[in-house]
Length: 283
Ligand code: KMH
Ligand code: ZN
Image (cartoon, rainbow, N blue to C red; front, side):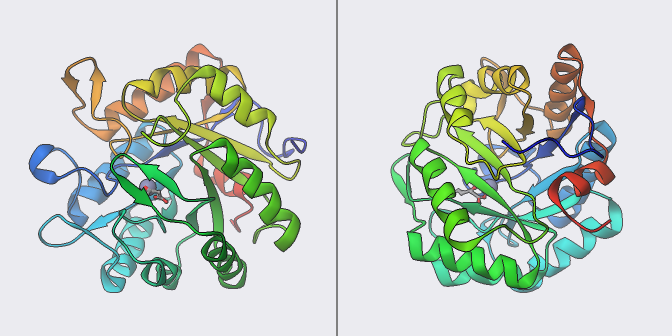
């Protein structure tokens, strides 16, 4: 990995909140923020609790996942108005979203976008990210000046990240931030061993990384990430129970737990200004 940036001290911990996701139904989890108002309230509370970036999936009037352009633009505007969080739009969408619509997410001009480095079996579904699509989305992010966060669901995707950077150069902003998404049925397991292997395989251009473990892998992944000096993603996109059989009350509760874990590791929440610097975003 490259040296840490001088303006972001080692003790600063980036907490990214992924409050909604695309795979949980509102009916199964009424506390999931699916309306714009609910999302903005969650974003404000999570920022106050220590989050510096938000990874956003949006829903339609029936609480179903959508990549509707008008709603995406309104969401970016509302989050910018209400918070100072780095706004990252998901280009992954739901497992059912077509590739051409996913490319159009960048039209909503977010600060950052997720960019998954390969196709993954996703439970009983397939999360499709063919190599030509990955390259198209990456080049579009460079053109549109959107900072990508590379999502790594599997070790092979770490190798694909190296190939992408070698072939197409650095992202807009010049920093390379990636996020291990672990414990998806079909991806790499959410274990300490898998995260250690993933970090060891990162290409030299990587300047920062975070990790999240789905479901019951969340704590093992978070504690390993802290032990390895990484950053954390948390949120109801990834986990719906706070302990065995106990539902998560809110995204804030998960951010608070991440901040508490960080404090044990002598890390303090990164400010939004530091997050912008870490990611190579203009102030
Ligand atoms: N909903 C998953 C199929 C991303 O946001 O980029 C994909 C996902 C990754 O959540
Ligand atoms: Zn997502």
